[in-house]
Image (cartoon, rainbow, N blue to C red; front, side, top):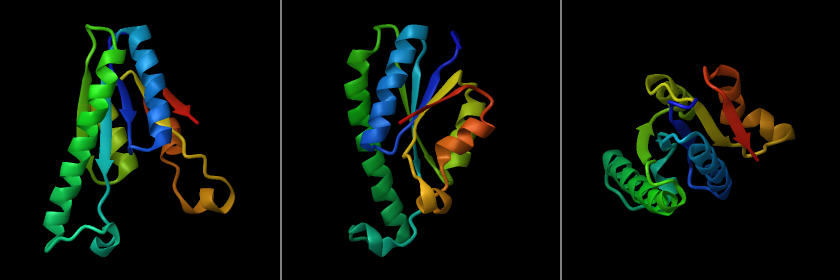
Length: 147
């Protein structure tokens, strides 16, 4: 862990922001960098986003631009909280959220994943796949799930 970076997935939610504060604490403790990863999942229907576009490619471009803007804002907020020698690496991936996070963790040999749990229970838990739970079971590195 002391020579590897921390991977912190984000969907820009309040819960993800809470997990990010833990990732910052861990990064400062272990003196490692943070990989801030946002996975853009494929839109289920272009009409649901309230974005006026002419093609699905244009929608994907606008979603990517939005993701880049949000990541840039997060990096600007995080950097002052990190020790001077540490950095934040913003990453945008596209596809299945679980698969992309797992793939990124393996490709970059991360030392730990710090991820937010959205806390689904009951029927909601059965209908909504829990990425944090799946990562805790499948990842090769430690996973810290933050409520």
